[in-house]
Image (cartoon, one colour):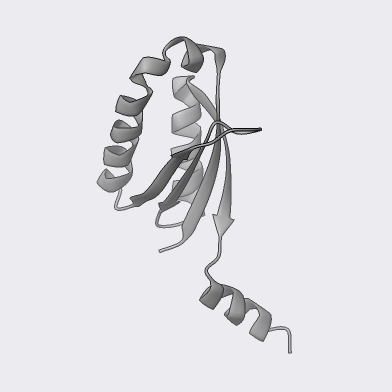
Length: 97
């Protein structure tokens, strides 16, 4: 299953309600599992982004649906990207000839 990394930034609404953030992480984990995916890890970060989530989802459409759904709630904005394993990278480079 493809891996995705979501870079998260709290919105003003998210900061005002920060105490409920741990519960939202758990709710996201359950939502991901309900569509057959998996939250591999979640880390709070310092710097440009407030958090990073690494997850597995079926495909790019599901990843986009998840990112838009999270953004729609208004607590965080997301920047989501496809991540490739070392093995996948080797396969990609192998096609270069």
